[in-house]
Image (cartoon, rainbow, N blue to C red; front, side, top):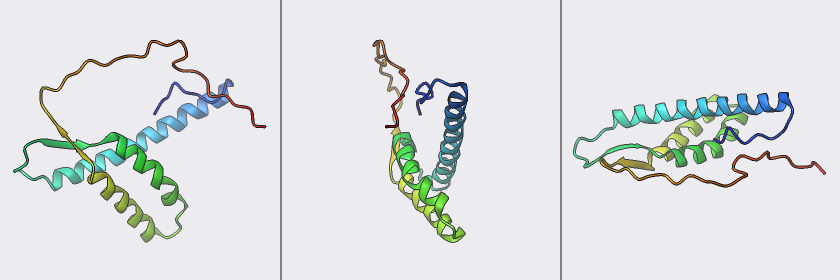
Length: 121
């Protein structure tokens, strides 16, 4: 979710991009909270590590299923799609390993956050 990547120069377009990113972030966080709640319910005490949701998988799965869920008219099928999406997310958990700290490398280029402006024709 790159909020610094905007698709235009006009104020209205920038605001639209901003609010769309906030909406998507809130939806992803709600899905993450649902997955973490389900993870806590199904917790097994015999595991070596604690586990958390893989955010890359969560965002990719969310992108794949959000349109299907939004277009579906039947509430039962919509709920089934949501449960299937949540199941795919729960299959890809990441262990929380204590003592893992690595320094991040930051990009030092000139055009890190350029405008994504393309001509329509």
